[in-house]
Image (tube, rainbow, N blue to C red; front, side, top):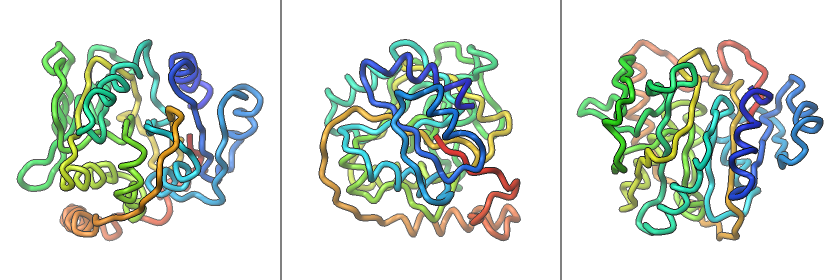
Length: 268
């Protein structure tokens, strides 16, 4: 994935951002590949596989920036993808986080499962997106091409103010992987911040086609700046509610400490 998708991130981000790749104690040749083929990336080496959520927290704690952009390793970005998000966030100080439009890398006219055009929850607590409800994914016919406020923005490509991310405690590591961005955005909304989808920015992803929760890279793209760190968190209520939903679905351990497929734990 690094060899296939990282070049687009570097090519279309170098003028506006610094690209970091954090390694979640991978056991493959990810570090060697990065050093040999992508020396312009800044490496952050973590001592163990912390999972998606806490892996990001550990990596982002080492970065000073005005904005963070959390990016999955299976994301192909497009020309001009960062500018709309940076300009919108600069112009709207009441917005804490935003996301681009997510389309399928296999069909550029079809939304992608992992966030589509922004997320919500129904009255029963089930997440859905503009462009995707459960496993039904829509074609992109321009029906969601206006910016829209959301309940949650996808963790596959999450643009967030670094100061606010740290003030609310970042992603809740107890989620390990999956639903962590819903919890984070919910906490942002509870504090009065807006979360928005900006479909002018587009990225392509392969998430629906079998990405493992641990072997994918955890990405951190940041626009350099210095911000204070003031940790806090209040996501336990949401975590318990999500645990109940998973329990009803028949999962005995909704947040496993190890990936069931025993992947290598490589992260970007």
